Image 1 (tube, chains in turn cyan, blue):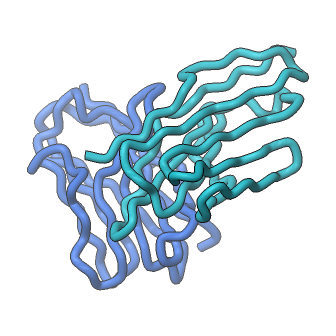
Image 2: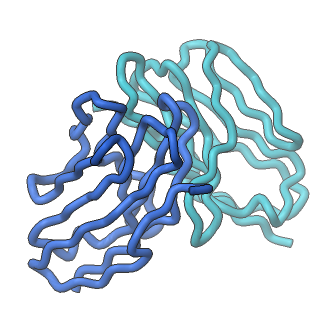
Length: 111
Length: 112
């Protein structure tokens, strides 16, 4: 079955450092979404990417969708303590409506 | 309502008992998802409802798990003869035509 892996599993950074998480799918995706889950909270939608090679920015966050539509990345510039949480990608395969979530990357930011 | 509502927020049950978890999606959202999240883990897909179409049940882990969605709105996830490995947070999400998912706060299920 379809699998979506994320690396790294954990990342500790000093406040102000950059952070990147990578998402890889075993199958080609029709679109990919990114979610953030704060400790003790539920996942909250960040962004959706649809086109091959697409790049989107939200303030300090940059999202990319790979040319083959099988991988994606989230990059945070100059992390802040408010960035703490677990970041999940969620991929959708063409012909289905079943979002398969990645394994997640837990980010800790040290002040 | 303003968001996805799930009840109860916490449920403690004894092994072998049946439990029902409820999800009230955002009004007008046609798609409804159930996911399971074990402590510190990712989200495991369970089941998906879209309008009047047959649900996608491919993620249900065993025949002890079932779900229904009445009138295209409220959904109930039922777990029969609960086992300790069923302990997890059960998350419900709704969306408009499978666009971005809006999650509820989840039900923390503990099976003793």
